[in-house]
Image (cartoon, rainbow, N blue to C red; front, side):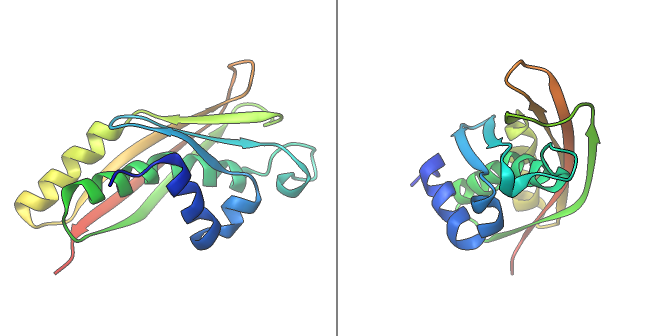
Amino acid sequence: MKLSPSKINTFLLFKLPSAYFTGVRVKSISKTTCVTTVKHKWINQNPFKSMFWAVQGMAAELSTGAMVMAKIKESNQNISMLVANNKGTFSKKAKGRIIFVCNDGDLINNAIQKAISTEEGQTCWMKSEGKDSAGELVSVFEFEWTVKIKK
């Protein structure tokens, strides 16, 4: 059974409640793209009246990590996943609804296939861009995912 936005959002409630209660949600997921969203509100704000950077990071990480989970599920293999590194850049205050998009599904698919064929751990950098409702870039996050066959 494929992962759907509603299944991932339910997973958030029980396994990542801080993301769920700050408003992070998956809007869509496909083989190559995942879209997450979060709206600036009291519970996720910083003292400067914009969205706290870590909430943006949770939404961005989910846009990459949901595809990693989906690709692992699709492979029918017992594979571990872990973020080894991350980078974030901010270009504007995050206000209103921020939409994060990751289009790197093919990159993680290749890393998982290589991990399966070589039985060695693999890494893959995935990027997520956050834009506000006007389409202006707010932040960019990059996550280095590691995948490895569990023995």
